Length: 287
Image (cartoon, rainbow, N blue to C red; front, side, top):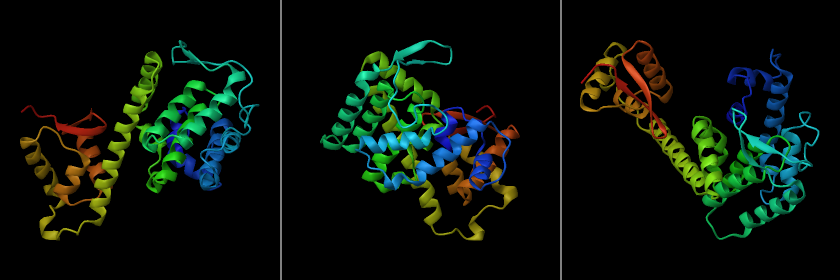
């Protein structure tokens, strides 16, 4: 939920979102607070939704943008154009009179097509953004419904939602949408989503393996003052290091590995860089 709102430029931090949901007072734009409360409600009711029912899609939209737009829970009545950050029109949404029929056809296709759900959910996500059926909230609903479709297929996607997968890859997400628009084909978007989902699953598997692995003895776990030399020695043989490598080498948790990498980066020992779908680190010392 937090990730999907952050993608849409909601200004609340994760701590502020938690405070709002706990009923605490938060100084923030009322619109952003309303978005948090609405999104939390619909994500809590995800199990109640039929992923192939247009009425449930409209109900979800009604909750997601309640109090934020006059057409909450309704297909838009006017024309709409999608623009980028510089105000350039990327594409025009479907004419409003055709929106209900196209959305129903799309839902029926997802329900009945023999295409694997992993692919169908990506196609639905892209096509819904292309139709742009609502006056506001199209991105949030598209990502929500993608998660709903996948979680009904494989329950693990209920705790590994599409929104979180996309959050750290926002620029690539929008680039994939634009590439598909230019090509008049959803292929680029499907490829992006499959790669992002694969990367997220690998990270989840590595984290689970770390949690369930037998604890190393104290004798085999480097003392705090000896941690950097272990990493330094690794980097002399390997160009880069990832969080999972630090966990394995030092026998620490994911959170501790993240903290150590952050500290070493801040101190100038490491440089953080993006490698494909992962964050990685390399030494600042020249080989």
